[in-house]
Length: 163
Ligand code: FES
Image (cartoon, rainbow, N blue to C red; front, side, top):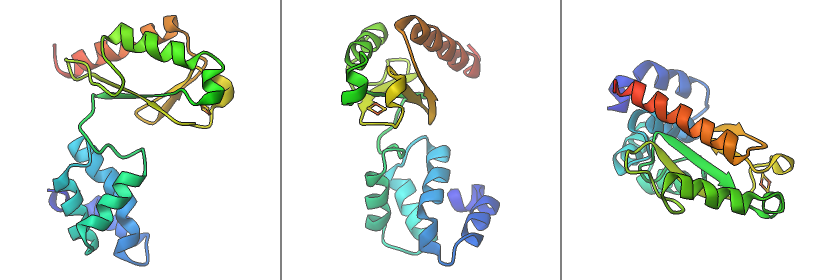
């Protein structure tokens, strides 16, 4: 599917690199965008495009946290609760966020809108509590600002579904 649907984009990616193997990560981003996660099918397709073994693609997808190895919600919230952030209240913030959404660490809400998990340092230690949502940082959060963001994203998800 990737080769047909994203042919032009894939050709542009390959043109940037001296060999096909070097394009694994940009192609994984394309696959993640297409499927919503790095499915086994996506691994095989990227491997075929790069003309390498799927295990090599899987090892790269598994190493980097920006690749989703399992299906996630529309909004993938990664809350840092590493030590510097914990010292600024990240643990309590994280628990309150989970409670607000009614899920546990790593789970997805029943409506499929939010997946929440804790992660190690995201290099914004002085701005905790903070999180990354679909690769965008939100810093110096309080539960009040967090609830407002959750409701905004929930409304956007509903609008996107035409509800
Ligand atoms: S410890 Fe949380 S961003 Fe660095």
